[in-house]
Length: 363
Image (cartoon, rainbow, N blue to C red; front, side, top):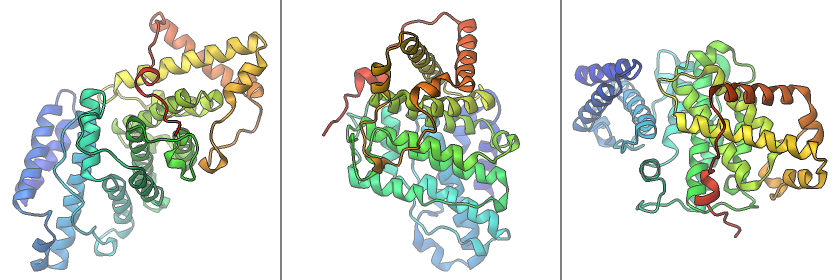
């Protein structure tokens, strides 16, 4: 067991220093190999163990599962470990409160099966999932999203762990929705909000509400990986707005993106997604301003109309579309974003990926 722990700790060290990713991944795979040789994925192995040993081994196994699935997403690596053994019991730990938070974190990463992560890797590697051996079905999507929605965790263990659990939960919801979009199984209207094009707006709103009382320290102490998660939530909202043509929820996208810009760390930032969302916000804000200046009220209002029924549980706005974009705090936010981008480079024509590659499923 000592060799497994040494490999895992070396992985933690190297992935958090610049230029250490390859070495860190090697140590993570080494730890996984040791774990598989010890057959820690097999429930039968634990029958001869004491309660204390079972708790320590299962806790470490799921710590490694979380790390592997996170790096699968970040580095396009296949996953090996399955959610195949019972979760550890919080009351068996020296710190039951913190252990409950860890268990909720495990649930976020264990909710999708291994095939989901393989499909995700295929998408990130090839730009589509046409070569995947597994494609999700609507009942599976609904069940996984319900499992993720059920994850709750109090502030009792501290804001740092609370932020980790909540950001992971909503990040995973966004990833599952993303694969749903790429699989062409989303609907304009459904009794299940998770099957609609508008669902990322709910995810973003939930994340903002869940973390509104968290301090800067809670964000910063979660390291560079936090911005990766928040950026994926923003990416989902941008795709959602693009699919529904509903610019009424740009302020939610702006609020999420502002968090990314505030806490970003270039060590782990997917620059292509960051630039995509940044430019998307710029173009949409300019379009809205132009429509208002031209007095094109009917066209503007039609852009705000939703194509979904109320069962998608979308957040409501406290003002009209026109009032929203005349509100000085949103105008100022857009203008500051525009000025920052203009200083960096001249805006070039953007081909929005979703327009060409993801035809809307209207069935």
